[in-house]
Length: 513
Length: 101
Image (tube, rainbow over all chains, first blue to last red; front, side):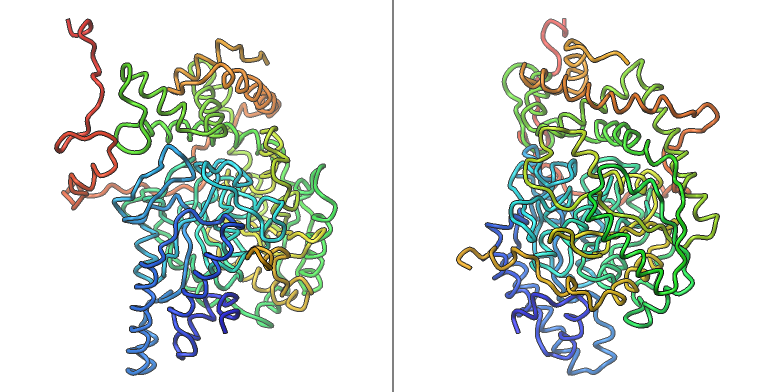
């Protein structure tokens, strides 16, 4: 029973809670026991809401019991995620909990308010287990830039989980939570989802409110779900989506109710017939691992066998997306991170010398090496005399990147199919001394952010025993389409040997084992 | 593309209000120059007739009514302040006596 509760999807938990087969308290106790036993080795969590979440689980259980007594209509009226455990990346403010964004400069900060998505998750009945590790201010591709701890990949403890949402990805992959929240500025949901063998989606820019989320690059940041199935990712996305008067960049585009009725099984697989997918040749770049390319091409061939039409296409500006991103994102970050001044909140080194000395000491010591690097890059790109050559130029190339994608949708394609990452998970330290090598890890995901489009990564096999992700990219607001395609691919590959395989090092995380 | 000198790195650090050690300045000088080589490749792209995009998903920007709404209490807003005096955040003196005079 308890092993099954660890593996249960959110959809399965809801069914079991309704019928009374198991309870939110049992689910939460099972997950907390696994976290306590394994997180010293896994390193996914920065803060656990142990006793608080136990109380909330007991309350959810009482609500289910009362609804069961009242009948099916009462059960149907319950909030959609009642009793379902969810992990939050540690850049989501939740009242009364620490929010560090993985940085020493926010050590000790306690959120005095809820992010809109935290409030929405609570209103939907979700049980927030705690906050997960991340690269400092979401700047990184391996979670090695966390100022707090190392998060390992449950498929190989010697390897990174990807990043920056590595804690949220590893927590779901290691069966510590069925669902988690990440943020994706250049691939920080899709790349770790790919490296840990789970499903992760970056929605369309504006789909999810960012009020109360620690900002990195405001024209790129978007919040999204991690899950172990497309159906679960859709359920979580539905809960957090929608316009928010507190975030002017959130969209009034209605949230698609189709997220709650994703096709499943044979129905999802047969819906692939006649779909038109574009396969961009630029995503199979030099330096891509052969095993990753083989797994992605095999997945594409499976889609074709199911009746989809695959055309090779060109997105010629892809090769310039990385440089464009590494101008725009640091420039916006340098402005967003100006707020960390040691005066209103966070770590402070004010007191000796004058006010300027206090700023220099607070920021120089409070930010880690990658954040300092990005602030320097951004400040330089925006500084007098260089703005036109760098920032303005990058904003123009961004237009060309968006036009590349527009041509694909105008030609009638339903989605782009591509790798989510050029490599499987790499060993700790392998890219730490070379910032450009680390930046290249996001080469397959960055163009999507530059164009504001939705994208997801869904597991498509193993290469040398490590997970590979198939990326699906769609036109604006096509989240239901992308998740339906992912559900179709899940059905096609349901009998593949890797589908039901636990992460290789999962059993070893508990220590003695 | 010219390389960033040490003095330029120090100037940018001052603009960004980052107090760096000598070793950190040296390391950053090397890192930034590596990254600027990547940036330089954008000069190859012809953007002579291309408009700039600050965002690519264009949304209407509605104005909200200018009416008071509930907000954090002073205690909530100040709970994370490193130094507090009553309902205020305490800061270092901003003007020196010399500047005052």
